[in-house]
Image (cartoon, rainbow, N blue to C red; front, side, top):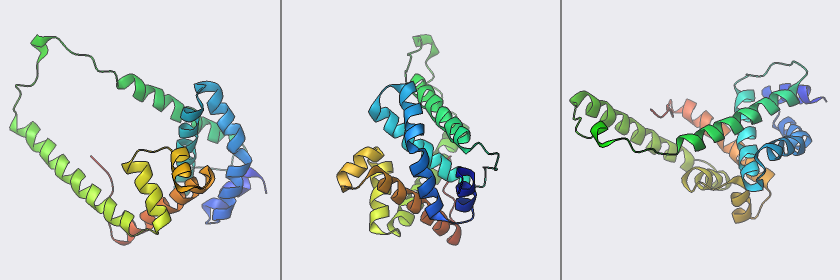
Length: 192
């Protein structure tokens, strides 16, 4: 099967098709990322983020067979890299002048919106933890280590003594299962 046929097969529910797709493309995609960022740990993290986005986009049927799957994956990797550097740029905090002090604003409307958003986000996190606790232990562990301990998939693989591909696979199945559970229990997992 071609890469495009594997992608379409995965969209139709064949999870083994994605495993084959990953094994065919992982070296080229990783090399592409590594050539840009020139840091192996960062490249590993961005590679993992790329394939999580590929999985999500395929599951949401955001791929159409154009005969250029590798180019599509590379474009996703490129966007992940751009997002990473934008985030790094935005993390630099600049102190404003003292006359620009906004700490004295106490608008009830602003405080009310922030409190409502905070309550909604807290409920969403409680729902997320409840869904996570319904997962099989291996999947729950990967989700916890990735999102609550902020470990890279490389670090997760080392901690759990499995390959990076196994860690990615467990995360993929965890996300699939959590989506099913959220639909089954009608839980909205969007943060404000």
